[in-house]
Image 1 (cartoon, helix red, strand yellow):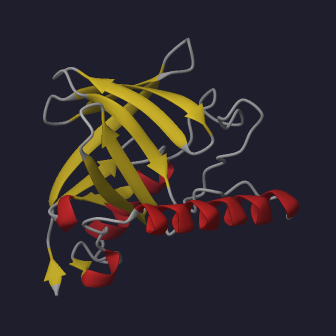
Image 2 (cartoon, helix red, strand yellow):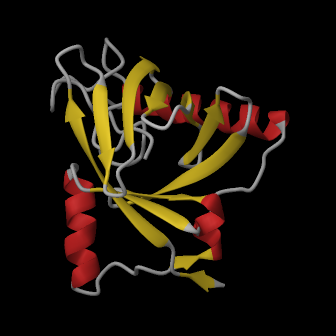
Image 3 (spheres, helix red, strand yellow):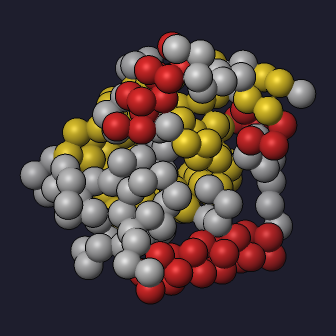
Length: 177
């Protein structure tokens, strides 16, 4: 199965308090703050709020404040799939996102999505915990080897303050798409 998702571009702006203001091309806005190395708390201009959690396998769990849960998958080059592959968020702020757009324009990065790239529709609590353990193991391996790419996208997910202080004042390349 190959799918061509609806693309929604966004840009991030690091604010003085080290939170991030995310602006989507469709007019939505989010304010995001890192809670720890794997969680970002957010609220938007449409009254929604919740938490994004980076699980293993480049899967992102989005839990809304009303209890709803959805999953996304970071597929690289600043692109994250949501809604069972119907929506692709494209980070226009990051180098990866800009590079993905450039490579896609040259035909070097497929804009179609295969079934193996789709995020899960749902996960059991046991499956989520297994993915959390996988993420922790990946983080530990990166830390012991001196690497910082815990998120698997070229970003440093494990600095002392929970942000990458080497670039943009601490906002990583693709904080949970």
